[in-house]
Image (cartoon, rainbow, N blue to C red; front, side):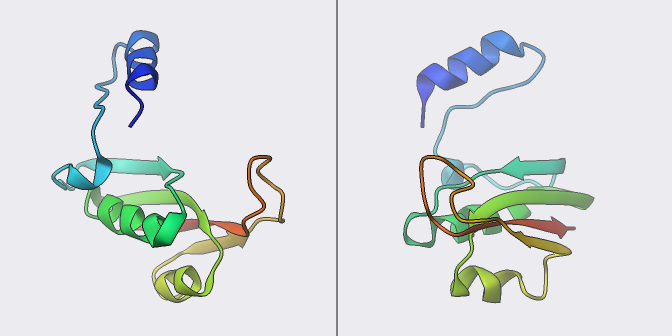
Length: 106
């Protein structure tokens, strides 16, 4: 959680409700048409965050996420992703983790 970033977002985009909380503790409600996310990757956290976000996706909506490109992620998204794109190593300057983008449609 980053209170300073949440404050900045609230000030920059006053028309958008910004909540600073542990994402996994937020009650899932299928209300969002689009979700774009870059969850944490440690210990399979990307999978936990994406599963939770899917519960917030309205029917007909879609989710786009950057996640690790590992065997667990490949298995998890094999049958539900409408698009998977492996990114080249080093795409993100702060890590050399193999990553991919997934799109999942509700």
